[in-house]
Amino acid sequence: PGSRRWDTIDLLSGPNRCHGHSCGPLLLNAGVQYAEALLWLYRSIGAHDKVLSTLTEERCVGNEGDAWTRDEFYQWTSNYLRTLWFSDNRDDVDLVMSPSPNSREAPVARLLRLN
Image 1 (cartoon, rainbow, N blue to C red):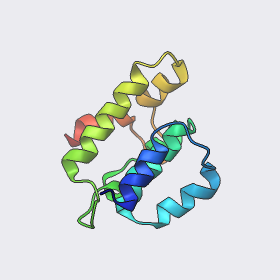
Image 2: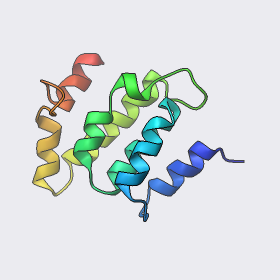
Image 3: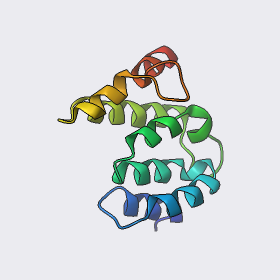
């Protein structure tokens, strides 16, 4: 038996017809246990900059229901950064190495510093 969270993640982790501008705020307001679903939504529409700005421990890790543990957060983050790094898209590679607008350090540097 699946949960609503897992059903949402399953829907968003593949090709879908969800409208990011409509679904994003709904998932964002649903709480920390829906952070992974929000990240998959952004990822599925190619909004990698939004994934990286949302991908913080404060927004993704918690004690509520199905929320990520710290270890799950860092595992997903490292897998995601690896996917961007090995993509054939130079813009994706640059995202891994460049600071996001709300941070002064690159995502890969932040991951290494916190682990």
